[in-house]
Image (cartoon, rainbow, N blue to C red):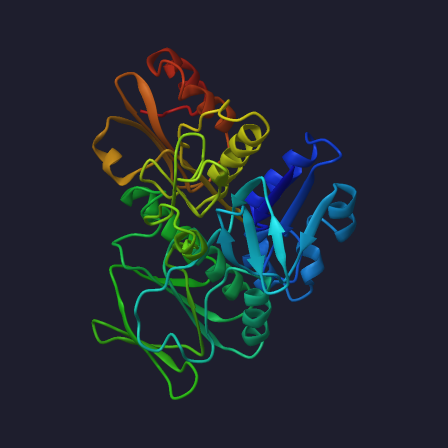
Length: 397
């Protein structure tokens, strides 16, 4: 049996690793990446930006030897441009490769708004080590940076730039930062914490144009304000890499459409990670990618034995002493009943949303306390846990 995996991010490498542990010695795993590197820690790229002592090797998780020892035939810098479903073959500029089961784990690219000037030199997105190296080289020569987008990645990048000594400004379209992780009150507290790192924030604002002749010189907002900048980073979400799947005639929408077994419209082709659209949803974060990887690996070995029912959104931001965990939060949940705890002295903010005796969402800012218990609570009676909650967070009401 030949198992081919296109992509070497967290989804692709997790599936490769799980398959390597289970398949027979006469089967083969072939994995492709367009990058010149093996698997590395993408979440650590923002830290890499601001730490000039780090090398790309510090980010590597698996060496070339690991791939060989795991019996994974790894092809770096090789782009698959065609999937021949009839002959069960993938094609690159370097060769043709036959598969019995194929996994699409190509991930996503950065989704950039149509802002004039993004084509200028020193306007960047951050998705790969190659991006990070280019940005870091420019950081060393820059004095000011504008970050477009106040989500998790934008904030992590902003802190890294501020630590590197740049005047750093975040421009966020929505009325408050982290609208997918925090309610307005929590975001206000977070904003105060962020300002201590030397990061300025402009919310409820849009970039009209990036100004400069050949390279970035400033950023013009739609309200007329002009922000000095010799470097711009766009952090405005992701765009699943669906082009290959679309060309192969697979069903695509925003992402590659999969069923509950994570099969695409071709049952011999699976998909996992940022590329996936499941039940109308594209997640674009690591926890669902790892959950999907386990489902795909199991179903490849034993077809249609495990169902993927979707993932509860859980995100964590930990930069220095700035800690945030958000589980299950969506903006419409602000209408639900909630318990809240605020300690302005320690900048702690805790909010637990519930409905019909079930915990629906958790926001923890400035503390990690009780996270394992809260994760279990989603499957339990909320009222029966009230006493425990009051022990964990004295004064929560």
